[in-house]
Image (cartoon, rainbow, N blue to C red; front, side, top):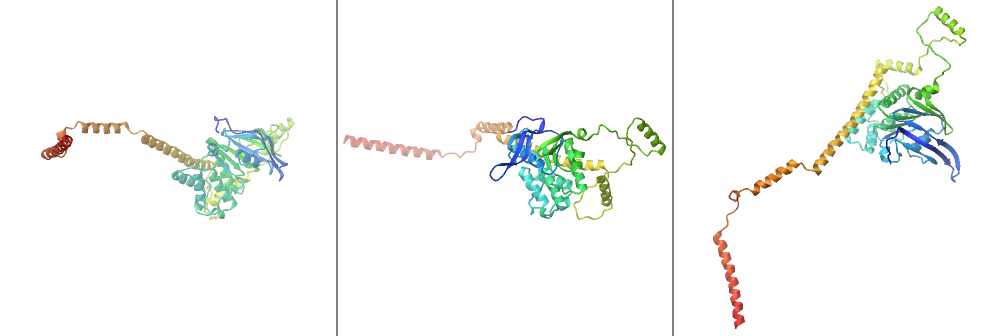
Length: 397
């Protein structure tokens, strides 16, 4: 049942899951006494090593696993409620897709499950295939996809219903660095548009760049919880980045720092490998080098990349708005069918009155044969009188 809108997209109360053995005896405590609150419109990272309980938490949130004790609320209700389910997008750790359907048919199938009409499905499918770089492979069977390509189509199906809450379990697993960067840009843009993203991952660099807050799990418990700055900022050190300095200037800075008893280290900043990799591939893409892999949209700058993601999301949102308009039109048509236009009834009534007040002389009716009618009446009377006289004679005689 859906309650009033809560400030939390996800809220758990003492959530616990203990897996038993064949005889029902408790064997493994996967999650224990978890109290977690995920705010609406934020990217929350659920981090931890393999076996820390991240996927178990997600399955309990989605109703795929029943908790041993405790409870969880999702978007103010329970995930088993169809009204709540319709607002959730989920990308599991492994993409279980029908291998004989192609990419377009797969998205169309999930669009039908959410009740999207054909026009909206077609619009959203085109936008999503373009976004994940599979527009040129829309007719290729899913069974022939690599793991990275399967993750891309899995992400597209998670977004087909324009969800309020997006739960991503290892979304960048199997993706190349370009695909990983695109997914991270997409997550950031979705958060700007009011979506809530619960990101489950053990790839810490990915979570660091996109998450507002994060929780680090180990052994089914939350070990650390807070914003990225709160957890990672080193308050006992200072970092200064400048342009190229002369040796004399560096020596002066060194003497000042050493005078105050602090450590001093000078080094050339390193570019991140991801940025360097993407720049190399972007240059090859610009030179139109052939490739048999997924076609990634590589814009000239980060601003262009952000604009491209925003454009795709605009197309997805507009499809939903169009659906609402069609719903309004349908309701209007149904209202007209139930409550006919009074002006039409007035015209019909007026037409009836005019017919009633029309002079009889103007009505085209057949003129009756008066002489024939009189003869019929006379014959009937004679017959009646004759029968009556016969009855009286029998009585007297």
